[in-house]
Amino acid sequence: MSNAMRGAYDADPVIHWERDETGWKLVDKRRGCEYRSGSQLDPAEPTDSAFLGRLPRPDGNGSFLAIAGIHPNGSLGVIHLLASEIATLWGQVGDRRFSCVVGVEYDPQSGEPVRAELASALYRHEDT
Image (cartoon, rainbow, N blue to C red; front, side):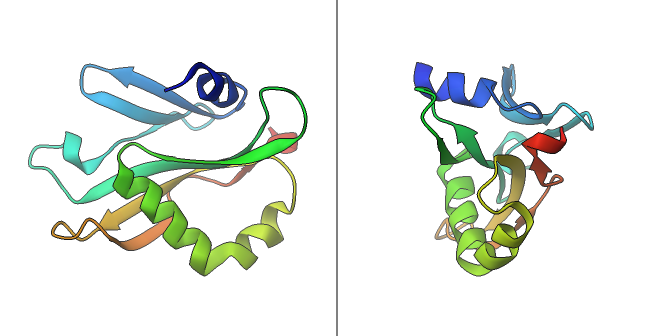
């Protein structure tokens, strides 16, 4: 993770990236929930978790949309969700800052997402 992205993610008041002996995870600090990749389970599952949010730019000039899966399958799942639910998402957050965790199920052969949905609450940052 680059220093610029680490700083941007650190500005999120609710969803945080953490790493432990099992690997990367997303943590919802408000609800105390952890979200991981299915590849970290035994037996492994074709699932991943991903961050989606509009965060402040590191230079302070506006905001940007951040998309990051624990693995690439998670990032693809966020794109899948945005392609099908962009109007619903926009209706809930508009141009404000927000963050959430997206849960992704993918085809184990192709790696392509077959289902993507919000796994956490959709947090509007002015509400946190």
